[in-house]
Image (cartoon, rainbow, N blue to C red; front, side):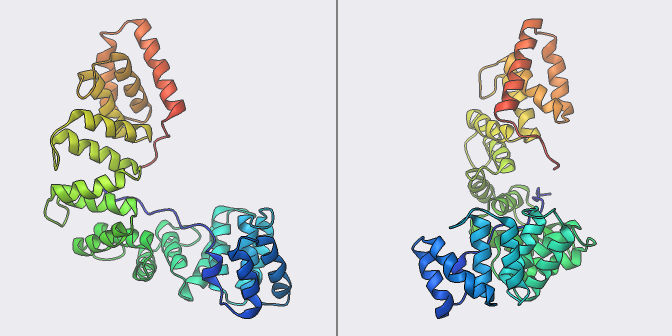
Length: 346
C-alpha cells in the first residue's frame, strides 16, 4: 500500500490585499498607495472609511496590522478590523479570523471559534476556508470528527483549485475515508495537486506508482514524482528516493546516491532513514565503514523507537572499546543538536 501523507495543517496567512477588495474609487486610493509600497498612506486612506463602516477598508486595515505593513504588527488590532468586516459578511475577513483563532495570534487558540469563522467563509464560497473547514472536520478540532463532512468541504475546495485540499481529497479516496476507496480518483486528485508543485502530493503520487497501489507499477513515474518532492526537502520523499537508488529502481543502483538521500531524510527525523544510515556505516555500503558514525546513527534511531537499530548497535558494541563508544555518543549528540528534528507520528 502506498504511504499516504497525513492531512496538511490548515492554511495560514492573510489573503493578498489587492485580490480581496473591489477597486471602488474610495478604497482604490489606498490600493494605489499600497501598490507603490506606501502602506502608511494606505492605512491613512482606509482608516476613516473603515470607521464609517466600509468592510473592504476594514479588511485591508486588518491585513496591514496582521502583517506589520505601515504599522507595527498588532494582532489584536487586526482582529478588531477583521471583526468589523466579517460582521458585514466579508468572507476573506472571516477566513483570516479563523486563522487567528486557530493559530492563537492575538487571542488564545480556540478551535471552536476558528471552526465558526471558517464555516461562514466556506458557506460563502471562500476556497481556502473550505479547505480548512475540511481539515477541522477530518481532525475533530473544534467540532466532532466527521469524515463525510471533511470529504465534502475538501471536494468543494479542490474543485476550486486549492492544492492542499486536492491532496487531502486524494488521501481520503486512497484510504476510503468519508467515501468509498477509489484509486483512480486518488490518482486524479494527487496529480492535480502535484502539477501545482505541492511536494506532499508529488510524493503520494510517486508512492502509488512505486507500490502499484491502484495503478500499474511504474518505476520511471515513481522516480519522477518522488524526486520532485525530494528536491523540495520532503522528508519521506528523500528517504524513498534513497531507497530507489539503493534498489536500482528507475535509476542505476548507486549506494553513494542512496546514502546522500538517506542523510537528508535522517537529518529531518525520518527514523527509517536513520536506520539505513546506521546500516550503511556499519556495512560500508555507499560510505566507508565507520563504527563510530554507525553507532551514532543507531543511537539516534533507537531514541526514536527503532528496534532494528538497537540490534545493530548491540552488535557494534561487541567490537568497540569504551573510547569509541564515548566518541560515538558525542557524535550522536552533535547530530541531534545540529540537524535532527524530533521524530513525529507516522
